[in-house]
Amino acid sequence: MTSAQPPSDPAAAPADAALPDAVLPDAALPDAVREIAAGYAFTGPALELGAVLQGTDAYPQAQVRIPLGVLNRHGLVAGATGTGKTKTLQLIAEQLSAQGVPVFLADIKGDVSGIGAPGVAGDRITARAAEVGQAWTPQGCPAEFYALGGQGTGIPVRATVTSFGPLLLAKVLELNETQESSLGLVFHYADRHGLELYDLKDLTAVITFLTSPEGKAELKGIGGLSAATAGVILRSLTVLENEGAGAFFGEPEFDTVDLLRTAEQGRGVVSVLELPAVQDRPRLFSTFLMWLLADLYQELPEVGDLDRPKLVFFFDEAHLLFKGASKAFLEAITQTVRLIRSKGVGIFLVTQTPKDVPADVLAQLGNRVQHALRAFTPDDAKALKATVSTFPRSGYDLTEVLTRLGTGEAVVTVLSEKGAPTPVAATRLRAPRSLMGPMEPAALRAAVDASPLAARYRDAIDRESAYEKLAARAAAPEDAPPRAPEPGRAPGRASERAPEQEGAGGLLGSLLGSPALKSFARSAGTQLGREITRSLFGTSRRHR
Image 1 (cartoon, rainbow, N blue to C red):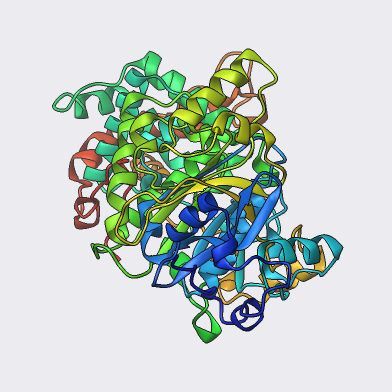
Image 2: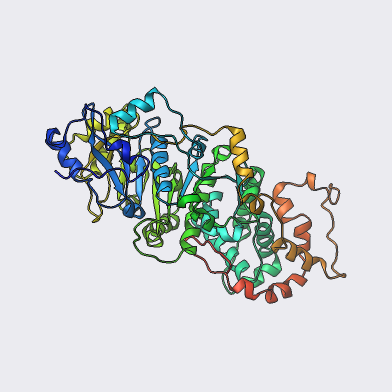
């Protein structure tokens, strides 16, 4: 038998060379275990997951591993709540960092920040390390901590509305296909006429103008925007802003290239996006994560298959991305996942069962770590059966194994260095070397304050954009007749206006009603506007 290679982590190699006396020599391993171990005996650098599990016994000389070079073939980490998915992410992420690969993690529950601090030794960790042949030493990773829209301790992550694009924004606003198409028309018009959509008030201003008599005339050549559809979009934007989501859109916009950084000694930086403050808005944060991926796809050059990925992106709570998605949105996801591997980016989707992921996307996930599933209800049993059907044939009764796995155990199959699936292996996983839990608040704040990125992104800015341009042009003519106040309301009392009237019929609406805007809209196309190009998701970046 070809024995498994020693761990690629230099700190672990010396201790793993001297395994406990209780470990059986290769010749004494059960035949099934020996056969599985041979399938994971890679020659190149690899990540160490754990030891082959048979029954309740783990065999430290039979190591389960993932070749570093196949991590851009994407993966799936699945399992019921409480089975150890988060610790598996942490285990993989810290080894990637040690190998010089940057990592992105979405911290949904607030318990991933510990990856930036050394772990704490204890009896459970010592016992697990002995069971799987791991030389455990505490070590944290170089980490950056971000917060969506600044709602949290981390460095604020924002996107401009124009960069976010109509397809992703339609998902956040829960628009139907007709409304989504109309929103795309608004973006197209703004792109052509140099009307920068930096924040939500810019988009509101452009929609309001396009539903005015002057704006309708401008749209004749490329389609129309009905008052009813515009009203739905404006009301949805108002609700979004009232929920505090306006802080997510604006400048300075986050540059996704900052996710590709390495630190001292060539270790990859682990970027942690904290999301507990927005976990009650799953449609928003899951779509925002997709924006990060779409932007990376647009920005990075083609590189083909590398010996190690440029970035591995863990997409937690992935089922939220697909729930209620339009056909166009699903097609864009599928194509992005299919093509981004050639940019050197690997994606791991994290969810409860494989059935949460559309078949076309699931087919592209070559590396699988499946934690335990429970079969308490008929729906659970159906999900279990569907999960078993997605694995290659093996010597296991996976229906039984998947319901009996303990916390920190999983069924694994990955792609070999030649691109073929490895044998299915029940695995007792290693313990992460970083802190398994949240970092202390004071330490987290200190890490954020010390970041070289804090000064660049912390303070929001509000440059001249569509709102200011439209308002300024409308206000310019001195002979423009003032709009009479509505009966029974004092002029200028914004607090007494309904939200949709503030966007569509208030001061801005009065300004947009000026005939002067007609000539402005026709001449507002600029070279800057013409430089906008949009990706599969309709996301954009002006040339940097």
